[in-house]
Image 1 (spheres, one colour):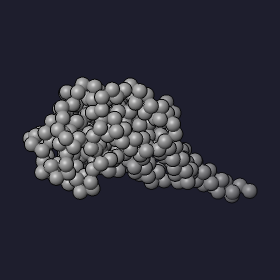
Image 2 (cartoon, helix red, strand yellow):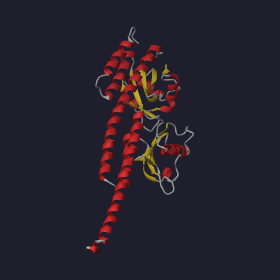
Image 3 (cartoon, one colour):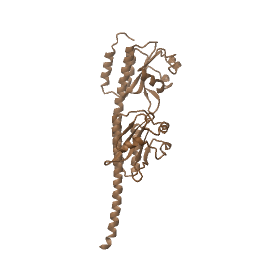
Image 4 (cartoon, helix red, strand yellow):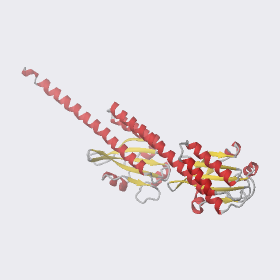
Length: 348
């Protein structure tokens, strides 16, 4: 590394550029390019976790060949636990270190040493930033701190992009839902479209809707998307604790379904690939008439804006059910009135 390089000055310049109106991809590319230039390296690559998998795919890179990048994606299980424990991983000899995979490919690529740090979003590791040198070297404390700072900038860029995408998608979701409610009084069709749209926009693994049967208190399934028939086949496949809380008007967040003691069907959820969930009440006027469950394939505490969006969607679902109910009631009353009027025509 070049002597006398001012990390703080470089970081300030990068932060200033981040305040400009640049695209998400441009910001990620800036991070890897800055890492290589500042640390005098061969290459750098920023990997992001693929949704619903344990693999990290390259999203921005400089200095690496396509053959090397496509050789094998990074596996989260091999690196994330150690990264979260130590804050970084340094490989002084990337061609012999047994902690690494594809040693021969690294040698062929001309990679001598590697420094890897986590890219975090809201304290969750969403990616990995790796720096590669062409000559063997031991990384200094300052070099590690600088790469960690650049990874934090990447996390900010990812978080900001995620927020903007969610706002855009949420607006479209509400527009589509309002259009469906206004165009159809077929409540099953409305709720079915609703669950499908929610899964697509909020990137959920699955959604189901259950309504309370006033006659026996049971909660039959009325709509779902993304869940297998095997998972849904049992009509009482509900968690008593979370459901009872939701029926009292509370939104319940379960960030780890396997670790949470209140979850009853842990084996079934694990088999289905469910790792976290939100259970929220469906309201009609001031009464709880059912619950909506949102299932995710990733461990998540769920950002507050996502929870607010989910509660709003459940409220919209309640309005759709209420509108359909009022329509059916008016239809019956109209039929009764017509029958009553017809029976009295003999008087005239």
